[in-house]
Image 1 (tube, helix red, strand yellow):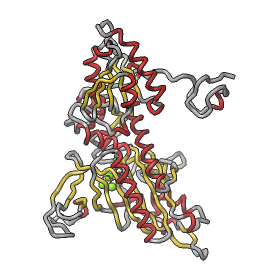
Image 2 (cartoon, protein in one colour):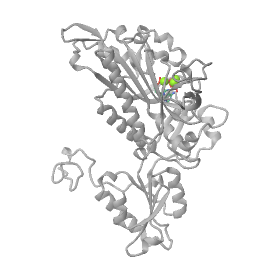
Image 3 (cartoon, rainbow, N blue to C red):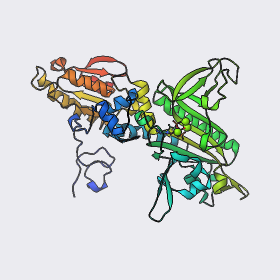
Length: 459
Ligand code: ATP
Ligand code: MG
Ligand code: MG
Ligand code: MG
């Protein structure tokens, strides 16, 4: 049997490969020239691919197209390219941590959703043209799920022996959602097909449900804090989802499509949709309200028994008596957060990522082929191997810009555009003894010179 000599998983040593969890063999160096990254589309090409006329819309969309994070497929639908997929997978990991820290269990429900479920809540009609509908070969109607309140409630209702001891029950998923938006635009900010994290909670009483509501809101705050994204939590309208209490998590930025009323004197803030439009004074303290624009990245609803009563989702209490579950639902726009983070953090020309989401943490730039410093090429490769050896967290996180026909300056310009948090360059001082590498810490805007061990320590 083939045997792995070294392996980063627990089963190091002479263990047959079929018992290893990790990828076989020694990891190869990741090199930039191999990354699939169609980029630099002209504006008119994008418009024709998207089927639109008019201007390209916002900074994040332009940057994401320019650096090859996304590629237009059809109006409101984008291919996510390798860098974007890496960033999204990291975002999903952070979301999983936050949801599981409050007891969330991950599920995955079908996108194809039978019309009966939607007819039961009247939303087959209420959702109107936003619902993407289709019919199978047997003449049965379906929609492509824009959200999953009906599906999850029917699933929980099918469990006839749900006991109060199993509550609160917090189920969530991260899946594609489909909405026939009247005006898909701004790239991933408003798509017709996008990723959402949607959580649904089941509790034994209104008090318990409100407590769960608070927990999920706190988890959303923690997530956005960890991403370093400034946000405002505002009161919101319940819309077609329904329920009696609702909040949105908004990133204040001009390109945002929502208008938010904020009271500078007290903690009141609301989406203007919820407010009486004639209202210019704070309903809480009567002080004057100010207005700002925001991108809605998350939305929470306290639903009460609106859905559990339709599908008869019940639990039994301590006396084995059945009751309807009190529900909440909680959405987070996963692809929207990616684009919104870029919108908020980036400069006009350079992508900046929340550190936790950067597709690669470090880009290494060896000298140009044939240049005075070319002798330091081997040192960069040695640094790559050494860092990935002694800092296991950086395995798979370092990219070597092997386009040695380009000057260091050109590649540094690209690296700044792509927004790697760290760029390490083997320039003139790499030929000193000991060799010094030039390290750009992009988010801090600093440059320092470090030896190999210094780089390891920093990273
Ligand atoms: P919007 O007001 O922007 O249309 P919504 O209120 O219709 O959003 P919700 O039904 O509350 O959206 O969905 C939960 C989350 O899913 C939103 O807070 C948002 O982050 C994300 N989302 C909604 N629609 C889209 C879309 N078309 N493209 C990308 N993300 C979306
Ligand atoms: Mg909408
Ligand atoms: Mg909204
Ligand atoms: Mg909403």
